[in-house]
Image (cartoon, rainbow, N blue to C red; front, side):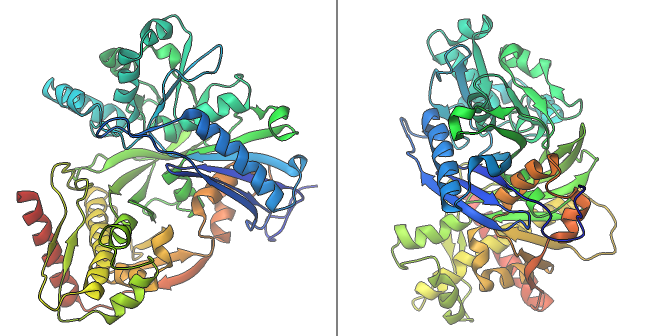
Length: 507
């Protein structure tokens, strides 16, 4: 019987979404109303073998995915045979290389945060290849992406290059590694969003770039097949969960959040606030080249047709509140910052530039470090808490203006930013965000938008969830924040922020 997608609640069974992150793994079971009915979460160890190096044990990633899926099923009292499909969303750019025959990783996963290939990127830049890489991939030449990490593995792990050239090694981002192991080595594939973050994928031609692979001496035989986000990625081996579960949806975490926020129309924008912040602006079928050091990426791909996006990243968002708690130890919990911000002296303008690890888009300055401006003898915890929340809004405006400058499409509709992530629980922070952007801010009813995006990809592939146009109609806002700040105050505050950033980058 065909489902009636005009009604909420249209089927038996469930969808499970895996959200494999940088510090923990979560798995969530959704019902046919997009409601969470079971979930499980596990943290795993981070490895820092040298300064600037960040690694994960690949076996920890797989083990926590399987364990949290089982926890989610147990939490919801759901049997594996009731799961109609599985979706995967994952930390992007993290790089794995494993033996094709044994499935054993030849080295730890090199995490997206890892900077070990900085000098090699500098050499490539001095060789004059940055323009080529940016044109082909839409990305900036940076250690952040997978390509130079993969080259490092091939060049530095004993025997790796010879095994790769003999066809005995496989490369993948986290999604590919999970799929390969879930399917017992049957499927070696990724989706277009994860591929577009490797710095090896030609977003113009929708295929791996032989030019860049040749430049980096990477055998193309080790690369996975690239599929749509909602597609057939094989079937989980029955031994894992006690029942075969089809894998039907895959997207990198920020792309999955874009989907979960139903940002399907050109001009729609979402911003996710966690440790850092990632903002994506849907540019439709247009590849928009940034003049403001933003990234051009694939937002999602259905039926072989990619939809593109501009992306900007803020390195420090929620992390500045963590710093108040764990570094300065002036608050006990992040939740305190809202009340403190309300209590702060309105006549003080303390500004935190949280460049703890440099500044992201649109500055891309890795060398500057954090600073605080405007301190007086009466500045205290409340003023610092307010400044911590405000600096996230200021950085978002930097991205907002850069994106609107790059993507100059006429629209009669006022821009609205859809937000998700831990920081969005603060009404004060969201109101300030709306004020400083002079734009509406929508906080969704379902805050687990990343997992929801992965679930919708998988569920729509098996006819359990509606197509994207109907999914968009079902998307609900829990709170809408309307700008209330006067123009003069808004621009004065933003001018002070820009001045503080310029001063910080001069030091």
